[in-house]
Amino acid sequence: MSDPSKVAVVGAGRVGSTFAYVLAASGLVREVVLVDADTARAEGEAMDIAHAVPFHRPVQVRPGTLEDTRGAIATVITAGAAQVPGEPRPALLKRNVEALRGILSATVQANPQGLLLIATNPVDALTHAAVRISGLPPARVIGSGTVLDSSRLRAELSQRYGVDPRNVHAYVLGEHGDTEVVAWSTATLGNMALPDYCALAGMACTPADLAQVAATVRDAAYEIIRRKGATNFAIAAALMRIVEAVVRDEGSVLTVSSLVQGAYGIRDVCLSLPTVVGRTGVRRVLPVPLAAAEEAALRRSADAIRAAVNALA
Ligand SMILES: NC(=O)c1ccc[n+]([C@@H]2O[C@H](COP(=O)([O-])OP(=O)(O)OC[C@H]3O[C@@H](n4cnc5c(N)ncnc54)[C@H](O)[C@@H]3O)[C@@H](O)[C@H]2O)c1
Image 1 (cartoon, rainbow, N blue to C red):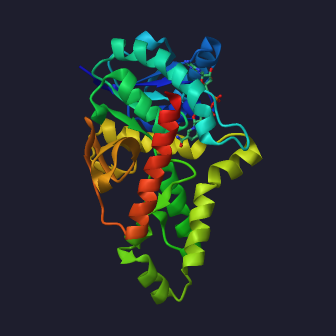
Image 2: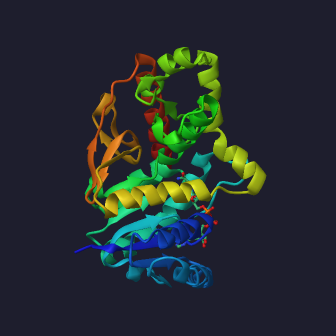
Image 3: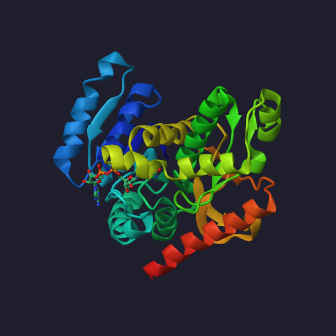
């Protein structure tokens, strides 16, 4: 039986430790276990986060081994090499699949009932690898996918059009990476279609404007990595949002990556679509109506992920 008050984090680097801190500060769970191949790192991060607990609600934050993922409702995997400046995500795949293989064999043995949440890049191909390696029901293997990119899109639209990001509903779909697709046809601000809002507010949202927004969102990781070497805060918040949906069984619609079997004619590939997420992982993938060009771009994105996965074999 999984314990909804326990979450394990494998990889205590910049992403894993930032997420562990956000999780510990949230009061959502009672136990956070941090695992890293570098045991001193996991110990140091757990100690540091634990010392913040008196400012928050009680939670045990401790270092552990993969065996200590036992019983966790979710094991969040952020272990592996990070993108180096200018490096395309597919180049990371080979080395990170090998690391994942070792992590999953021990984790699934210790925690066969738990859910896996993959954040390590390239996240879609690694989520696919995790489905295959783990042997878990695919609904229990999810990737952070474009939850982060959708947040970046909402932040960008919020700034540009002066609307609270919580009232901006807009999705990035497909690959978390260069072929990602903005579903402009579903984007709304306060329930108004984006072009209608722009007309009302006397603001421009020409195809060129929207293409510029999409490019800014797509290239955000490169821009941040160029400046500070890595990204950690927004991905930690994205992981927090997904874990919250799981722990509280919220049925939240999030653009997580999961094994797609048929939507838009796409099969046997992990990518992001609007997905109802709860305690059992993927409850349902929502094939929202898209414009023909968006559907075509989504299929191209699926092909790119599939090509990366096939190149592994
Ligand atoms: N999905 C997203 O949206 C998103 C966003 C940001 C970063 N990332 C990815 O997250 C991953 C981690 O990034 P980071 O900046 O935290 O890197 P990092 O180098 O700071 O940390 C990675 C950690 O993984 C550990 N590790 C490596 N192999 C391991 C293994 N086999 N078992 C246990 N621990 C192991 C390392 O010791 C290190 O502490 C990268 O792949 C990065 O590209 C994903």
